[in-house]
Image (cartoon, rainbow, N blue to C red):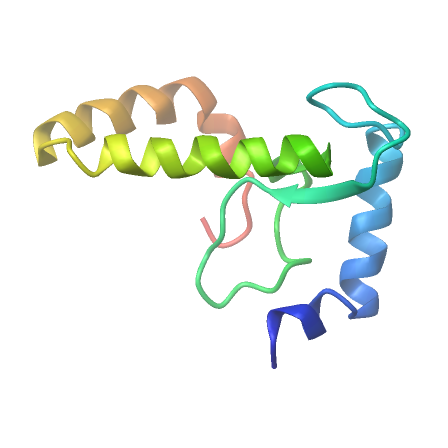
Length: 109
């Protein structure tokens, strides 16, 4: 099944509406309520359906901010790709310590 088909699934539509309502139908980056809004996944896990993510990893963003966040994630992947395993371990440990409660709340963790 194509990803675009999954986004039409009623389970995703319910989850998407829940996130939009939580965020007051406003972009969490710029606050816009007039631009086209998307629900952004902070990360993807292989095999997981769009609606199978913890709400804390989903954010309402406008179309422009969604593009910017995708660009930032691409930049982050590029930087991380240059770290040695030891540097990556140190970085990961620090980040997990900072946001550990949110990570532990994720399904399948």
